[in-house]
Amino acid sequence: MLNRLKAVREAKGWSQGELARRLGVSRQTINAVETDKYDPSLPLALRMAKLFDVAVPELFIDDWAPQED
Amino acid sequence: MATDEHLPKWRDVAAWSAVGAGFYILVVVSVSLLVHGGGAGAIFRSKMVVAELGLALVLSMAVAGFSNRKRVFSLRTFRNFLIQNAVAIIAFLLVIWGFSGLARPHAVGASAWIAAVTGATLVIVPALGSLAVASAYGGAGLLDSDAAEDLRERGRLFLYSFAWVAGCGLLLILLALAGPVGVLSPAAALAGALVLIALLVILAMATQRLSDELARTLSREAGSLAFYLILGLGGGWAILAHLGFVGAPAPLDWLTLFTVLLFVASFIAAGRRNLLTV
Image 1 (cartoon, each protein chain N blue to C red):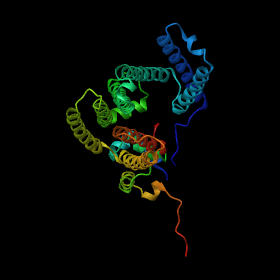
Image 2 (image 1 turned 60 degrees about the vertical axis):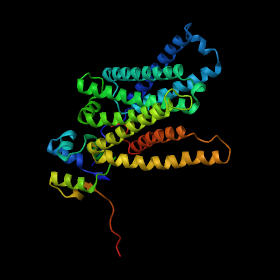
Image 3 (image 1 turned 120 degrees about the vertical axis):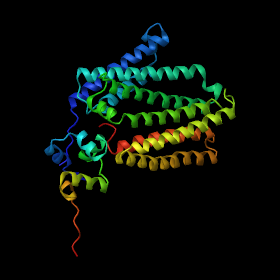
Image 4 (image 1 turned 90 degrees about the horizontal axis):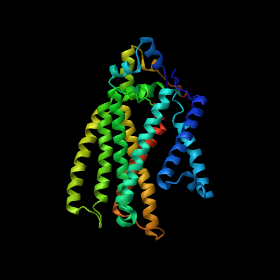
């Protein structure tokens, strides 16, 4: 799933390690999310959104749209 | 948008392939000098051997180029490559040489020999990994900065994981040494195995506690994949043995198979997510 994590992290001036420390995960996890190798769990996505003060759909982009009846 | 900032550069791939070729030639010449004493020419007399060595050369170039494709080629990374690979090759040669001398396959049985060599490999790999962690903490500069940062950040997790892998290896060695013609009595081997299993459980729990959600996800995926690999390979072997096409697997073969496939599954799980290189 595409995401804007790297952009919002860099806007804050944080390194991957700094963000990992704030979220309580490893730097590898942050790197994997930023490079689309791993989709975070819902609790981690919510924590990321809360940390950057944005909504989850602003951070993670999904092209899916509901079918119209 | 997410982007990959470590895109491979073909110049680096070509440079690492050339390093792989040079390193391979150096190892072949050194080994042939050690084995034959008289010089490397002796092993090049057979066309078959030359063809096999040539194929292995191409393979080593491909492996070195591909596995280092996102690593910038510089004097520092080149030096690290040489040191890491030289240590690994010497360690593996020592293990193979040791087991070839101490326990020849025909003397202890193929199952016990394969289990012992597999176990020794599982001991030596985490030992090398522990050296890498020590290097990251000691600031020896033998690792690239990202790898060193990861090892420092999660040193305890890596050490527990390495100890777990080494424990699996020791368990295989212990059981291999306690076969029908082994040097250990079954009772002593059972006692040792129970102690090792208890240690493995404690280490697994400690590792699980230190893991974050990505590591736990990979662990779950590896477990699931290992089940299907064991079902496919072990089940296939059992079917063929039942029908009389091949010999039936010995109990020690099953244990070696379980262990090897667990690690193969871990590599596949990480590789599927493109996480073997960070």
